[in-house]
Image (tube, rainbow, N blue to C red; front, side):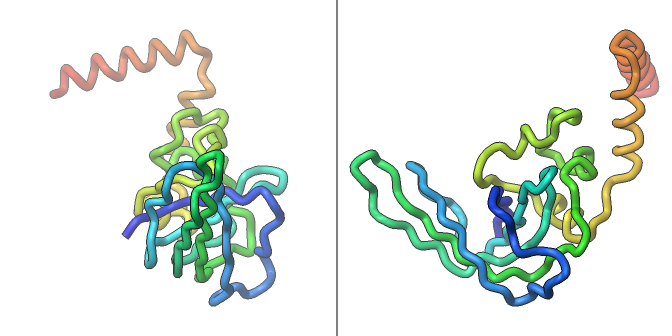
Length: 165
């Protein structure tokens, strides 16, 4: 099973409504084929004020259209939503819990594409709403340091870990 995120920039029907069993379709227009298939899990990421995870679904069907004269194809991904969040699951809150995020000050830069792969543990964290607290606290503290202090801390940390090993 593969795990995907889909970035939806239009308003998405999430929140107070019960969405279990709600069918939703997304249309992708691109040159490459979509590698996903039936049974894959998909996380919906939408932008209201800030990027947030609003729903998780299972892909029911993937329909690929024919290539147009420019080499693009239309791909329709149908899914059945299984979970939605009444509160916003902000991407900023999960920045240190997601392995694909490299720029912790701007985690949205890791989700610029319309869709992409996620790891199973990332989807589990999003679904449960639980962030990796130790990593998040440590990351906030280290990133809050002045650059000189941060470099000194990292050098000290590396030298102490090599001595212990």
